[in-house]
Image (cartoon, rainbow, N blue to C red):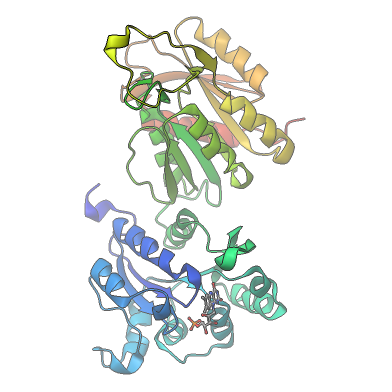
Length: 409
Ligand SMILES: Cc1cc2nc3c(=O)[nH]c(=O)nc-3n(C[C@H](O)[C@H](O)[C@H](O)COP(=O)(O)O)c2cc1C
């Protein structure tokens, strides 16, 4: 991508940081916004400086972070920034910051900028569960939302001081996804949907240097995540191969089937669709040698054991906990592809199987094109003749999300 074609090219984002324990995560958000082409001005509260240092923001953004209204280079900093911003993102937003914004208080650089802007405002809240549930915070969030500003709820997880509960700053891909939505940098057909895509062939370790692998390049899975992002989805790409950054998507690098299973299963509660594109090895070595196996010992006998069937496991959980989730499986076959695909569709209770005969010219592993059958649980079958993997991805997402949303029995 050239910088002009980046989704946030030409956009000026004010990144507000208030004084919560999650302030360090705003550094990652700054980097992501800049990777997407945005011009970012950091504005920190005094309390934020207790958690993160101004030099980090200066070095990464190339701009002096604004902290003190009365010591800024700009003669009228209190309105200039807000007027010039395409969006103001506050992450993390403390209980204190939300209260001030709800009340229209403007007593420092960040709150003044917030009151002086007509741009969209996104606030990613982060605080202890008790604070988030306090009636005053609940009322302030309600007021802010009623005025048309977006508050991103905190997520459940580990909090400062070892507590567990609601209060963690939402994952960066969720925050960035909200920014992209506000700025129209993404399409809208999958807006608000969380899509989990797996890509690449798993590598099953034999010893520290060797593995059993397969020929999957991951190109089709990466294309699915890219298309889902283009359609406005956020999500995660769980991949065994290197992948480019995808706006709104978390990249999760894994190697083996067991690692991939963990990455998928731990994200099931938030997903709207699972697209299992990865070629997961059916078997793995029963034992992994600690040290490189030496040639002198003669050829080793490697005993294999079955890997978990991630698609079947994930679908079983989803059918119970989230019957409306869309599940798409892939079948790479070398013989009788369609029949095998239909069998898999029924056995695994998925919504759609994407079936390809990997022996076909231009289809399957490593190529930039693919030709597939889409077999859906409503009985429909459609054929996509040799097309770019991005086009195949768009077609399969369109079809999967258009399926009758009747939950599985
Ligand atoms: C270690 C520590 C962690 C804190 N974490 C949070 C937090 O996550 N969320 C929050 O709302 N306040 C948190 N606070 C309290 C705020 O820092 C405090 O309310 C402050 O006045 C916020 O100022 P600001 O909104 O201007 O940045 C924390 C305080 C301390 C000392």
